[in-house]
Image 1 (tube, rainbow, N blue to C red):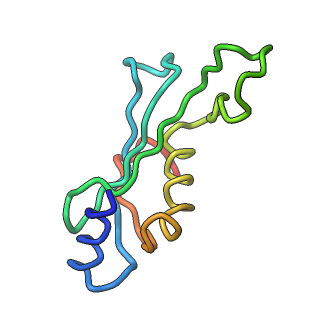
Image 2 (tube, one colour):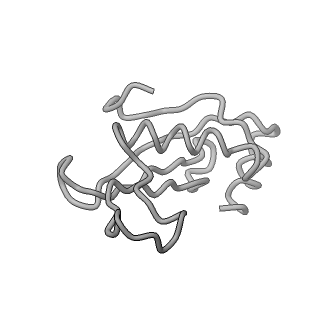
Length: 107
């Protein structure tokens, strides 16, 4: 994804780029516990970032790793998009200034 980010920056000529955002569930419908949200460069069509989200935590009463927990509640696509936008500068040195979506979620 680092190479895709560099290519998007080179093609656009600057670090402010538009991205397409979309999400998918592990299983059909909103009963799935896991999903992913992706950011794709509008200029190159290459994946810039992925956010993996889960509503599942197998061992809520056991402490085996502080970082192993459910990381999502509410709208998956919105949560993933926010996470991706917030880390765009630190991860790739890019600012995602506009996004294209499928209209399923309000961001």
